[in-house]
Image (cartoon, rainbow, N blue to C red; front, side, top):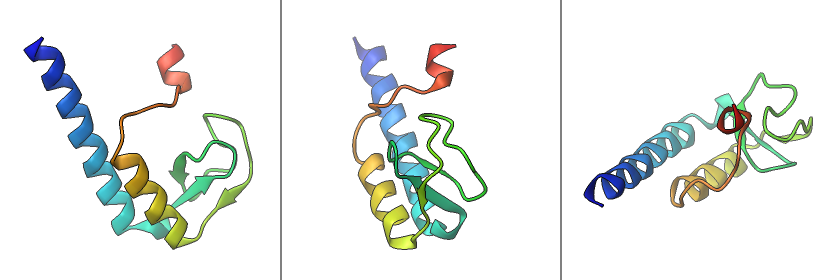
Length: 82
């Protein structure tokens, strides 16, 4: 049980660290309007939902990064299905 808890805590701290990295450089990211994932600024089609509409505003990127960094992962990505 301790190992499982350690894995969850590590994943949470990694998500928070990534959220802080994104929030400190919002100009390099955008939020998918289809699934609300954060992707790189040069992404043309969301790898998760295949949407092509993005919100590039810094405020939106920061808000979404902080939201996603504060909760456990809920989305399923193509990598998860491989």
